[in-house]
Length: 180
Image (cartoon, rainbow, N blue to C red; front, side, top):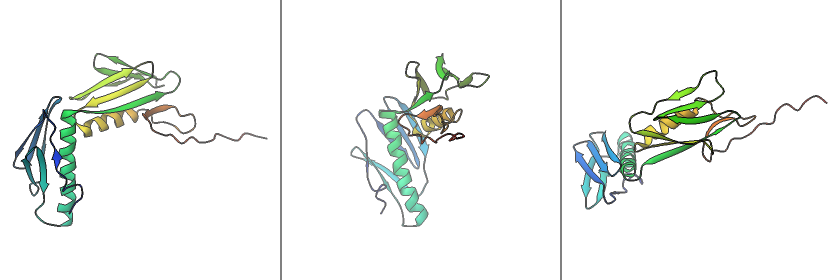
């Protein structure tokens, strides 16, 4: 039995979970998420918990069991608390600012980098600390948008310039030794 899959997902107060066949809808204070799951997974809501059960022990079904439970748990956490990723911008002249809801960054290119937030995503910019925070209720979408922002200028290992996740450790390389 899957260790992850067999754990019930607790439903916090203020969150409502509806199961319609293989479609699960989760509503909470921050919003609403809906997702379609594999039809073999049996999803039930009983006494404040969501349970996921599988029909047999095939390898593919066992993998789907833990995945389904984890995705439902992410939906419940997203609508109750939300998700956020913080990016730090390092480098001389590198900065970010908000214009309306749009993120505008100067990253050493000849043009500013403009990032429009997808639906359900908001940006928070702290110009003093040179940080950008990506917030939303969908964990996958928050991570994807943060990765796309980081991809504009990944951290280079010699000077440490670029965009990195908060707390990310960048291994620095030694430059040329020089002529003796």
